[in-house]
Image 1 (cartoon, rainbow, N blue to C red):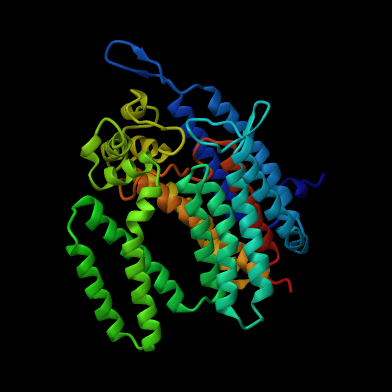
Image 2: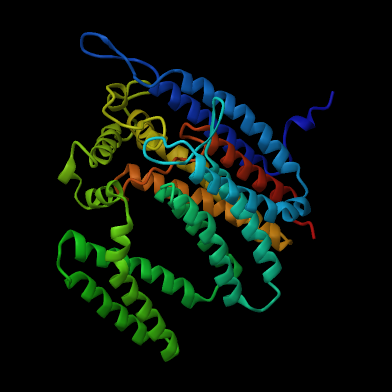
Length: 422
């Protein structure tokens, strides 16, 4: 009896990485739902055991969706890119209009017992839309125009998700856009202008809101002017980059005023967690304590005290990497990140080899998704970035994220099975 239909086509190493990451998720979720024995009694883990079983169900659903996605014709995916993108944009707008407000935000479409986070599905539709658009624009010879139009496309889900509000997820669309236009061949001046503008914003914010001294931003501008003097660009290009950096720095106070109070507090606490050690800085401090206490080999599986004594918040979602660091140490964390590295490197390999431009952009969009999510989540849990509420793909608890990540792995498998198709 043939069983080929049980395994989706494509790169077996990618499929194995998906399976092992899902198993790691189940192991960690089992751990955070297990009680721990304290000095005198068995302590309640607080997190219900039901999340383990729900994640197990979503894993099976994710595998089915992954298998279907891996078998869909690329031409079909290209044809449905626009309607799917429009549908998810309308869904995001609908959630803003009638979605229930949960914990101060409108992020979920509630259908009976199911809470669907449309912003997760929007990541898939945006990658499809960008791949189709960049594919059709590649022969026009108008790289700058295509980049500008694609930026406008990105602003649609970015703005809608930001209004929920969900700053972390909205930034994912920016990362996807940057990753895909980079491979499209966007002029270097645009990427440098965007990158330096972000750096200018960070330094200007630090000068304005943290230390209340203009010196760091002034030094940054002097260094930028010196760098622009050295590079062999036209005067117009140098002036444009300098003006973008100045405008970004000056505009920071206006952007700052638009952020929610809790978002402002998170950013300020990032620069100085001790300013609110039992409030907005609590998550970052406890996460670093958990990871630091794990050492090289960890405290042993199921024996983590930070998660077991409920010191670590959101230990089944955004801070699940901290649980891994505490119980399995540096070795366990390295092995988990190694699995993500397999997904990323194999995705780049298949994307760069693909003959069809649509397949190439599709694979590299998926690579940008996993790279951004993993880097930012790990940076947040280790205190290198402010807390933004971004899950670790395939590991953090949540059906919407697991489903989205499985679809994207299915797209990678799809591309890997058709690398040499024309």
